[in-house]
Image (tube, rainbow, N blue to C red; front, side, top):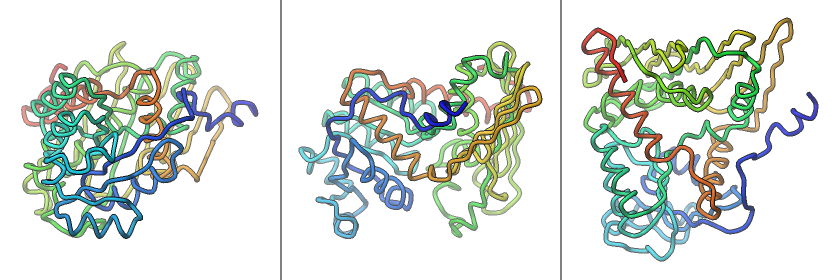
Length: 356
């Protein structure tokens, strides 16, 4: 057990420790500036060389404040400005804008790391994937849970049979969005920008995708319920959302999410022999709780906050670009999530189960 704990944070995915990927960061909101940028600067294989925003003035100001060499506008990016100064783009804009920036990156032969969910609709996500495939540029969707040590070790334990046969999953993700960003007109509450809704697109996707990653099984049916009571959620159907999934091999999953609730994140997988729980799970500082028989173990690593999770994610992406290993959460993987989310909303609207 001590050997396992000593190797808890080991990067089992890493294939190289040499080389540097230069990034252009597109969309300079708080997540990009406060989390993604410092994560890359702390990473082993990455460096930020270009910032891209709505105006040259804003981009240059933030570049100067963060010691980045170049700041350009969206229009300048589309025109190919500074394209010789970066190898890959990180797209952190609202969902409905991802496609346009991925298309330009593909034209410029730049690798793409796109935030989740990958677009606002399935159709636009399909176009994004096909664009990158046609240009033969690498595309990865930014699922930071895949490289969090707690999730990686949980995946290994499930594979080794620690919980026996998986039986059920319960995932929850909630946050008080209007307290975090007190603006009822923000993009996450605008269906034209966010996509099908807000809580499932932005939060529920964590439970769904992490369950897919851990179990290596796909959902085959879903039955969902949604409601929106607060006036700020008038344009989106899922202020609160719940779904019952049936995964392959008859694994049952309940997933709940809300953008107007106390911050709370957890994912529990119960099997015939034991249980693995990530609690908290998705907002940084992920902790691993293990139970089998009369033995229970909790492993915490507070150093892995959201920035550290992103650092691992960026190094994973750079490792894949510099080496020969395949990207796991590629465009096709992200497209599957988009189809699942579409089905979740379709089920809630129809009031009946939907096959996937």
